[in-house]
Length: 442
Image (cartoon, rainbow, N blue to C red; front, top):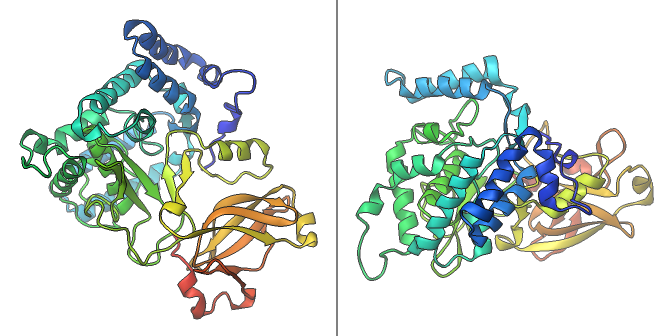
């Protein structure tokens, strides 16, 4: 899904980013201005005002479903999940069937959050998250800049419903806060509180199994706490929202390709009492900080951020062919894997056919139909395709835009553990001996 953010937000120029976004909001401008005026006069708190400005300035990276069809789908899903005569499999299959019949195209119809979000919603979100940051023991180690990304945002993933998820998830999964374990070691620590919330959510969801969600994702808070099945990204999202609802700083990290073994494609991270970034192994079913799959490796890991990735914004402004990279992603690959900055020579004949200075790096995946998955973009400098922080022990290929489509402009190559590069004959790509360098297709 390609969101034409650059059409409403192209880098601010001589005007402030805040003014650009206010203009892009159209008839909803008054709602955004009401938030700013609230923290300038009614509640003149400089931190809250800066939080409001941060949310509005970066709002062009975020979008929601357009129209009322999503509410029809969610109403149907609520009735299905409330029907105790149906097994979890039947609930799942019913949602898949209705998605295929009526709602398959719904994710392609979106609207920028700036054009639909309401002042009361934003003000409550800011006040609630700020109160948690200031008053909760397990958030006191968090800096203001960390607060902006790890606690403040009103959503953790795109298309998430603009609802009272903090209240809903706190009510469902915060019971343990009333009677916390009191001892000298764990009481009121971030890690212990996070694990208590994670464990309570895991038990109360009574999920039927993994890898079994079907139909549109259930991205409203009410539905999230009632679904009995789902995949790892679903439950990782629920974990982040549940943790943020009690004031624990949390974000989602993910890889753009499937994992080779049993590791997840999305997981959550918290900021510990010591300021460390501790990961789960995958979703809320796993312990926090217990190690992140020591044998796993991959091409890229991205953190879901609220702030706009300025490099990706610049890419959208200048590129002719636009790959649908989301703006709210930050490259954190080097925090997980050994990485290399690489420069791959591109022959002059290949360079001449390209219509952009941008090129793309694709990771090999185990799929006969689509054997390559784009994971990042780079630029050609001095005849070489340059990319930063690429995960090692992966089979790659460079592609470029020839005016019609993406085409290979390099031989496939393995980036080895020691950082060396080995080129591979394209005719041998299907050889089982290369499977160890490939990831699974999503």
